[in-house]
Image (cartoon, rainbow, N blue to C red):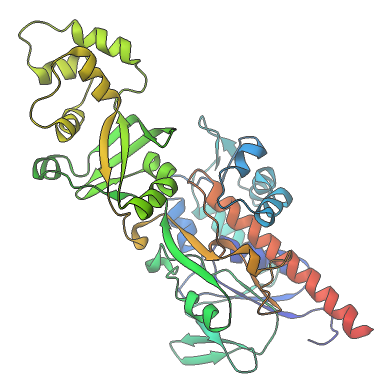
Length: 413
């Protein structure tokens, strides 16, 4: 490595974790090159901001950390060092102030990812960070140098410290295809199978529901599974159901499907109305009124809600107001397999924290640090994913800096 103050550091992966690691390393005065397989960096970051960039969340830290699974001290410490307020301050430092939405989620005031990414890349340029695109990481050479495939042929980098931030496998068209798993396994790193997280599930809908209601949103609903109730929205697809309320339960549903071969969740079509009030309204409907009219006027159900009741109960719905209200408050939905990983928002599985030390360095590959979705953690949408990426990117960079100093001391003694 030599004893020069400035060293050459490679960061592989141009998503939030990699770019933030590069920023920390460059601010420490080192020469940093970011390698990415795509023609430009930050593509998943831009997609995440397509409907409004949810950076992080404002809830108390204990509740915030409770969103992450599996529970790990390494991840908790990384977030404690770079908590949500630090991410907000960082964003403000780039000229993009933030605000807290009614749900507690934190957004840039512009509500967009592109202005933030432009400002960020400009800062990285000022720090001297070099960005090299169309370089696909394919492992290590015999002497430990990184090897990339490029349009001009293979490229080998001289051995040196590096940060790997290659993402999961849920966005292959944006660069996160999980191909790194094989390369790390070949290098002796244990990697848990990548699995879809924040994902929808398949449902065996009737032909009628598929043809009439595929693509229809379910607004202001609640989903219940294994004692957990989540309010939000969902959308029916041709072969299943997805959306924020589903994603919030997807980890426990995925585990149940893996264990039991399927899972039944319960859909509350009127979570804002108590069962007793709903029963009273249904009981007060006009004599002779059609069932669909009663459901629309008394229960406030849209046609898709009525269709879901029939999916659960068949052609004949419960006759009594109390039984019908109970069904509206808990429509059973049988879920089968999760959607494929390339249809997921994020990824579970990856490198277990037991494979890295407290500096986020791979025990099997000294000098190689890892961050972001490559690590075995998952969290719901709502700002937790980006916070985890930023925090682990910073932790890996700071770990690398600490390791470099230790190596210098060792060489000097």
